[in-house]
Length: 202
Image 1 (tube, one colour):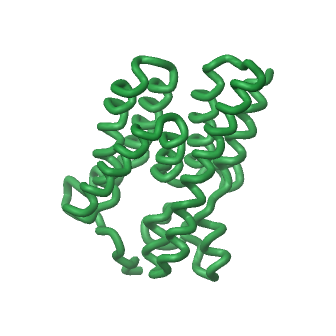
Image 2 (cartoon, one colour):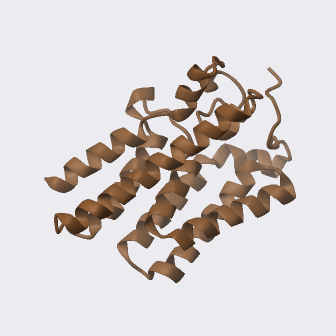
Image 3 (tube, one colour):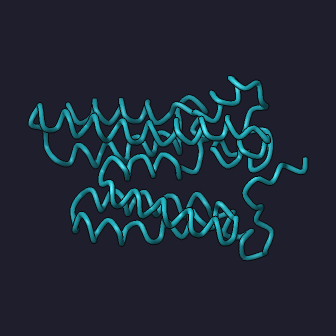
């Protein structure tokens, strides 16, 4: 029962969309109405308001980190099963991707996944960020950076965490991230994927 409560709270936290909140605060159009129509930091950046995109990025990553850190704290203080952290990690991520507050139409989960990774293991999170940054510096394509990071992060997880339940949770998140980028993969193959900072054409 305790694990179910933690899972529900993490899911609800993940369902809070900082893309929508930041756009409202900065009086920008709803991110679901332009560009990729994805409520995430990259699409908010297309509005031209960098501060809103940064707030979105920090908020979405922060909720992932917070959920995991709180789960770790209560796991130790309440002597809960170790699996509760992995369950919470997946729940907050799924909350972002399938948020109840946005009729289950959420973001792709990159920032929230990074927050989760930083909470689970600092080195895994940092390596995922470095991978993303290196790819985006070379090709300036956010989706390609996310895909490469999603492919490599499970490897980082096994190196630093071993074959444990948290590494399994990271693998599941990576697979969902790749699936959420299926249209981006099609555009990448066709050479039509937009680059970081480009504004919507319509």
